[in-house]
Length: 404
Length: 124
Image: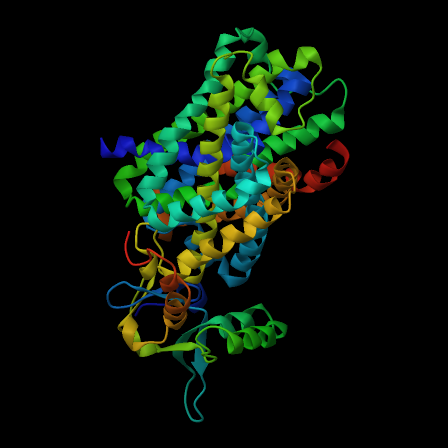
């Protein structure tokens, strides 16, 4: 039973990948512009994440070392430093975007502009980390995050033509607006396959004291958690296809996505969206902030644990204590969260190879994984994800310029 | 006789004290060349200055400048004689107690100057 409850770790990880401001806005944009035709990148992202997250959990369960620690062990300080710098820069933007997402939800429900919410949001985020334990964060975010199931309910209530939905799972070339099409593809993959998810999940497995007996359940958690996120993200795309596309409305703001929810769910759609997204963005913000703190602490060999009092993990806590207020600054200056989001997704795609390459080496290391190294299928998948990540890295920045 | 590959099995590994407390990572390994004798592994080192040296000579100066202005102001690296290495595995286990070393100088400085100044730091 205790092991089954660990599915919360899968759900919270998945929320950070699929149900945060970036993924939801992009999914709505995809549906509004191209209909079901862009369901395949969501399915592809989900599949890649199932494999990567499963590997992160397996590495932790068997070796008792996280992906970050093993990366420093095997690739040395210089590679670690490169990853650290890239991830801190990119994750900082994503954190900023998520804090912006929460602030926008508060703006939509109160009418008070989002810059006013930057400081309260930063304070709540910090307090949750400062006072909360890992299980509070994990279980709280995943339980409250279930509000986002509204996306699936909404899609269901609009009675989509399921055979057209299914045809969207097969990649096709766009008939027009190719730059925009590929830009959205890269954004969906960049918004979902985020390195911080792997760092968070593998650290979470250590926080929750996994051992080899978790190898089986880890597969279930990874598959279930990522599918949960992927399906809800697909739900947003389906709603956008049926509500916005026929009217020719292009999504360029988060508020439009909220209003779109009132068509399938007239009574509660708006409230559910605002509440669900506030929780999901908060979950994502917690996940990213912790991932960056883990990245410093594990790579530099500090003592770390979200479960211990701040006093006994001083450096670990100082990382997030400094990070959160800095991330609030762009919001205080009134920079649109959606603009930050779009930039952050393209940059996540650009730095992806640095996060993926280590997997191929680490997951085949017998010193770390003994008999649980990758098999042929997992290795083939990692190679394919790696090749894809190179392609994404090369095209992401030019597409950002031409496609957005 | 066990063979130890210093770069693969020791460098960059997590160092732990007698009670499995984290003491940083093996940032550097020092090999001594005595006048009349064979080179031998003298000690393991950890600290920002050692890491800066691994990035490049250019990085040493700014790191020293920062370290002399903020923090515990310890400019020399933390040193553990090779004899203190108790066990080598996925981590480097040392026969020392964290309190006997300066490995936690930054941890203590941050604790005293930042963390303890904020409310609710003592418990969870």
